[in-house]
Image 1 (cartoon, one colour):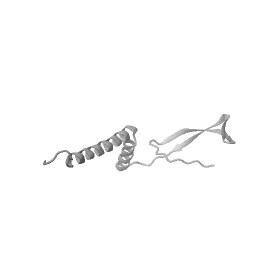
Image 2 (cartoon, rainbow, N blue to C red; image 1 turned 135 degrees about the vertical axis):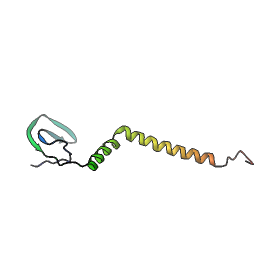
Image 3 (cartoon, helix red, strand yellow; image 1 turned 30 degrees about the horizontal axis):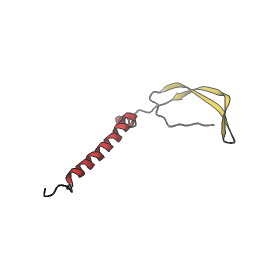
Image 4 (cartoon, one colour; image 1 turned 180 degrees about the horizontal axis):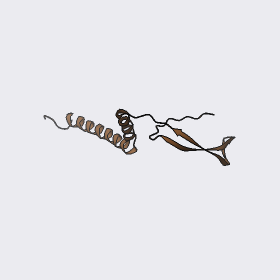
Length: 101
């Protein structure tokens, strides 16, 4: 059996990989987990390719943009911009109760 995953190793060398496999049964819509699992541990050799400056900047910027605080601030900025645009539109339209202005 071959397992693969999408990761970017930052350092080359030998690493220890531990995998735990547990059994789970689904009987009539009920999920029943097994009492114990089996641990498999092995050493793997990790090789890395040199990362140029562009790839480093891209990886760093993705990490910053995906941070929850940055996403939250971005959402607040969009809401604030929409409120400002709405306020500007309200101030520019003629008020029905003011005549002759």
